[in-house]
Image (tube, rainbow, N blue to C red):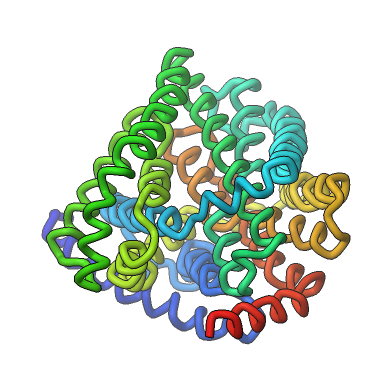
Length: 421
């Protein structure tokens, strides 16, 4: 197919993707699930697991291999912009209020699943069906440990916000622990990716470059944006030239962190966290969020779904591995974070809620899995097993949270709304 043919096909692909996400999204609230879950499920349904299995000819015509590059590129754009907006919503002041508990929960949520993931990697590495031939046992242990340690911070933040818990003790602890958790997981991933080049300095450059980027953005760029924020406060709106300037910064930050090996989402998130709060942040959300979540981000979920073949898990040993991964994920995150919260004196219901929230993988898990798959670390079989785990743990998050904390969460949201009036 020519580039022109691919560009024409892309519009049809996008129409089908958006329609599928909306149909599944209309059903999600009826079973107590947020929109992000519907997009994950829609992605799997459009892939070879269902659409490709039922109508292989249609699936091959709609999603030929040559078109994956274009879908991947636009998906990465949507992902970077979305993570920038997550950073815009992020409140660092809340983290400082709960540092001891947040660190304890985060360490538990990283260390336990990392160890469990490493043990599973050591167990399955030898059969050659899960990792590429060039991947050593130590590399497999590091990668799967990092993949099991990730938390879906964007989804966690969305649940906290939707339940009106942003300024509460539970919401503060969840956001703080989730942010520390993901930052550590990305550093581990940088080390893993660097090990594949047999160049330790790549990992040093990645982590050092990430720290330098964070310092420059937070200490240099952040104060420089204050005059722009004042201009927005005076006018009440953000001009399109100013929005274009912000988008240039997002693209540069994403390019830089991707270039040094940390991945584009980190650069976008840190830049978002540095944006001025108040009217400036509100305008960014108003102008960018609808198009990002309604048009661009679904492409990322569908791209992941197109690489997921649940049918590959077609033997009892593979089903056993999938079950083992799921159990280890729930124990490593949910149980470990619950126990850490209780040991830090958190009330029983809040500790259970923390465990439920930290156990969700969602978007961030799909990111790390796509990196591993694109870099040739894991096979499509292990990719599919891990996507199943990510979908199941994400589906579990909201119902479990509602079960252990739902009534108090709704009460907190009601009180917050009354206070806002």
